[in-house]
Length: 131
Image (cartoon, rainbow, N blue to C red; front, side):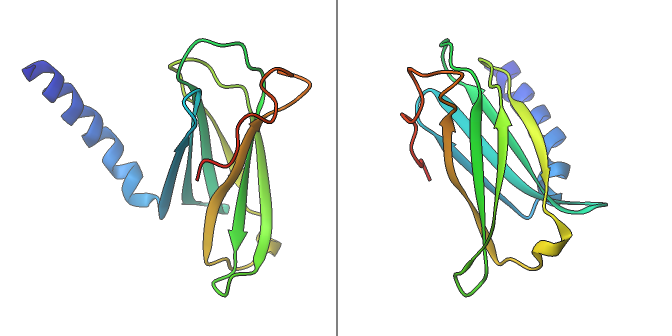
């Protein structure tokens, strides 16, 4: 028990500096796949680190994750998309750079994630917006 607490503290200490740089974070799950997105500021500007991880063994193929960027007043500014190939127990991540011409956006959300039909026809469309 003591070792588990020690390991948890070590992980939190390692992640804390990265979490401090992140401006916001979202996590969604449907029971098969867990999707996380984190807004970060890097030398090229604003970006999102999008990660997906399978929660149980199943052949699924490619997963598309869409992010919506909104104006503070509520209008949609831009939609970003990423395609990941999630694995069980291993987060697979990709950084999506927000194009500079996008301009200011007030909030963002994980709008949708779903398996692509050509890679997993038995799973395509069965994942809806979980957030």
